[in-house]
Image (cartoon, rainbow over all chains, first blue to last red):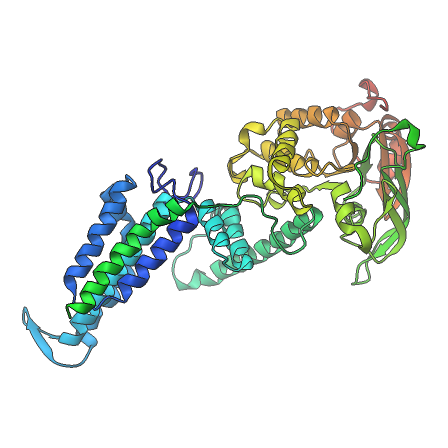
Length: 254
Length: 264
């Protein structure tokens, strides 16, 4: 994070996708992901078509494909899990390059990989075209429980403050000759983490005090409200509706 | 909300902005912080509340808007007693600016933060927008409305913190250590802003030159009671009083050598 002016996931722009109301975009991505996960895994061509749809959205949002691919790296831990599946799953085996792999496991791995990648890609696109602040407004609009929206909003506001506090504590440790080398130093790090927790907790109390002093009674006052026209909704619906068409075709051709 | 306080000479004598009578308070752990505080601040006055660490300054401040209650004595703000019944109006009238602006500024952008107080009071739409921009203008931060608070300098954050309470049109502005962590230029800018405001100010501080610069009157809170109340310059020149309450002037500073402001 640090001194960046917006979150790193966000890519500033003025495309039609950037300008869409946030709650429409969230609903569209959610719908798209639902459709993708309910597609039969044997319909490999369907996943190809989904990818084409996402590339079209990226093109319309003027998000470079290279940017999108770089952000997809976050998926790597899940890929590792998917790669394991063909080795551990049971059932009929196939032989590839001298290795005995489970046929079921291969399908499972493909299923996780394809659906996961498409889901992550759609989310990355959403994050790249919507500012965090807008995302929260969108979630609020979609009637997400207000407490969750407030918690997320405080995470954004205080993430940098706490990271900074953590950095200062590290500098203070290192200035006194401490370097974390191996397990023997873990207790020190654990105590730092504890101290950071207590500091954050106390800050929470002070923030609450400041909020109460300005008339907070448990609900956030509505300052900005986001609205969407019918045209904007139908524009946003293009992605999930096309995906649904692909999905239904996938089921009928089975 | 009740009617806005206006300066109507026909309405008879104005109630003081703040009137504290016999306020005593002990924390649940038995530690008694206040032993009968009496303090009256007239409308439009700027008063410095001086005192060493642990004198009970913060405890007193938290009584002013009813965060702490339950002890003996009364607090009245612009004629309205602090109590459960009209806590919302009390909190609108008493604008507390806390010491750490990161505690005070909790919304994602400056604009939303300044809007928080008035919006909690029910203001919406263009009126809310106008209120926010007026408050930001008063502290010279109107150009920063769309910025997130953590991208501002410390001095700018302190000024926005002042705007967040100005937006509520308070009867009295209570500042907790307003000059702490400010560089000399930010200190002066904040002083200019505070002088330009037409509002009652109670300033809690250790920074004696700053108190002298801004507040014609000062009170000393020590061991939970008000032990001195008078012209700031006279108090600062009283060496015995200062020593008795652990109040020390910075090296080389002579309070007699400057022209102190007089009451408005």
